[in-house]
Amino acid sequence: MNNEKGAKMIDGILGRGTRVRKEFFLFVIVIFLLSGCSVESKLNRNYKGKPFTEVMTAMGAPTNIENRIGGGTIRTYESKKMLKPAPINTGQFQYDQFKSPKVMQTIVTTFIVDPAGKVVEVKYSNDYSR
Image 1 (cartoon, rainbow, N blue to C red):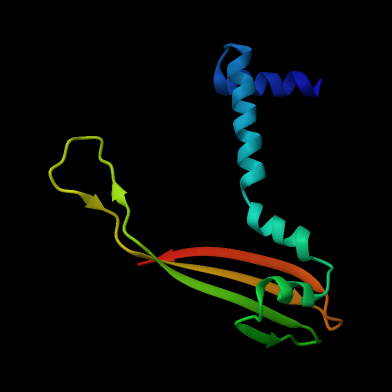
Image 2: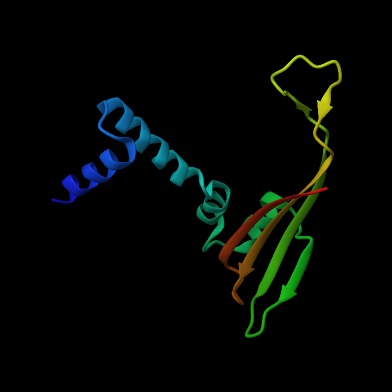
């Protein structure tokens, strides 16, 4: 019964069409969902529940350490990198080159560590600013 509802929903979105189109649509959705948080989930798989010394072996000393109320620490790694201008293709013949402006990329990785020194949670963010 649930498969019929799912098939009707997909038919409503895509219209009645070939099976290949439906399979492609489902494939794109699955890839989108799997790639959404890939860096953060990889960091969680690699370090969650393990001693923070393993993180320090791989990434070096953190740039910031804050004590938490009730014990434990928040250890943050922050890196900034200036990205060069990239050419912009307008799809038309142009005499002048168009380039994107320079951008500052900031990557922040935060490890929440319990009082025993084990990683409880990992957070990752990637921001861009001009």
